[in-house]
View 1 (cartoon, one colour):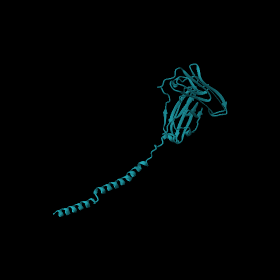
View 2: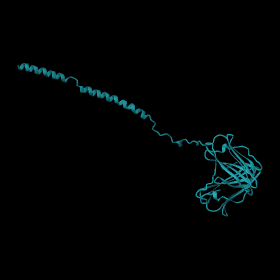
View 3: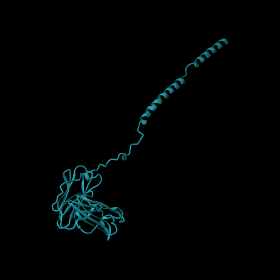
View 4: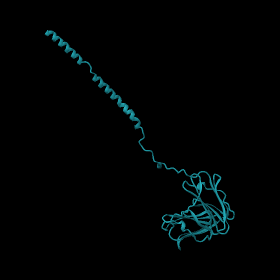
Length: 289
């Protein structure tokens, strides 16, 4: 009996030892987990690649490559003065572009395209009359189409019988404007100006023609309403000559005190023989001559 029990125990022990040598499922699971971990690593790197290729530097600002503002008037722009008595003057951005003289003078069409800029363009048309019977005719054309014009007459002597400013914009529009600003405060004092010229002279205050004329001109003209407190005031004097000799005498004063004057003469030059700028600051002081 004891021998049978011992034999049975030996068989059971052998079976137990054999089962201990069988591979365990946990080993296979760990191997699978390891394989998955290896597979995930390159997948993560692949997803990151597109991010790394995105530009990391900001685009250059617009100021890095300056360009001209796209508001330069396009095409052919021309002006004409005709039907003249005593003088019809055309200004382009405060420069004389042409003058027609009495009687019935005609400048013909003047191409001003090259004189326009990509900022603000003002064309000013002025009739200067030294006696009775002022007459004027002015035209502005764009690409050979008249876009503005005015004809008229006046019996008022010794004055600027007609003044009109046209603004030409970058969209090729032409609009009548008034450069006077009644909302601004005038400089203290009584400011007057006088122009004497041969052939013809003109004085502008902050873009507005205020006086001019031939020979002895119109005498003293009040310009107080166009000089403003708190800002620089731009005065421009110009003379146009179409013959041999020319001369001018221009004066600006406050009360009886002469603030600025210019006088000269010459010959052998035609066109705009004088163009000068004077600045009166917001306190009434002369800044430049």
